[in-house]
Length: 157
Image 1 (tube, helix red, strand yellow):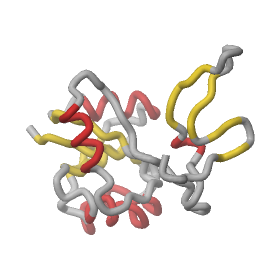
Image 2 (cartoon, rainbow, N blue to C red; image 1 turned 90 degrees about the horizontal axis):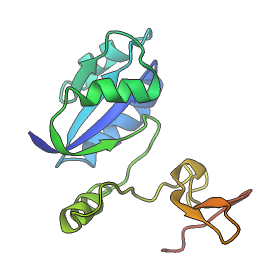
Image 3 (cartoon, rainbow, N blue to C red; image 1 turned 180 degrees about the vertical axis):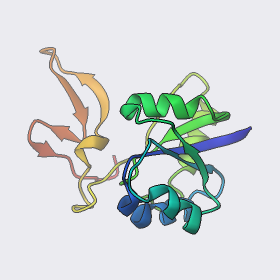
Image 4 (cartoon, rainbow, N blue to C red; image 1 turned 90 degrees about the vertical axis):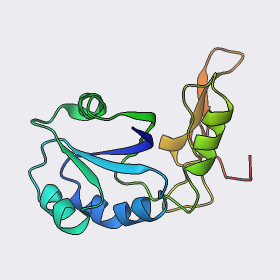
């Protein structure tokens, strides 16, 4: 059993794999990198087999959709921690160690996430990376990273 499994669900995403997977491999030395292919019809699988034999490949029999694809893939993986990573994410050096250290030190927590910044505006948080699940005093939900139409800048918070 691996301690940390980075699981990337892929569907016809060869271009994203070609662009972002090398960084995931380079900056995730202490984790097992797994690509779960959700029945792609492009050449994603051939690309992975030819260019990244170090990546564990799970080939799903049909496209199970986003949540279903991850569920099917995770049934085939044993790890202490599962990190679900979209194929269009650029990671940076030492991105995973703080997450693992936090979870190791805080067994009462079941999940955490790194800061996710906008690829095109790197000083800002990416909306999809908004964290939280906060509710204001009026009962409106909001997340760190985006308040209505405003994206929050990373100032070390």
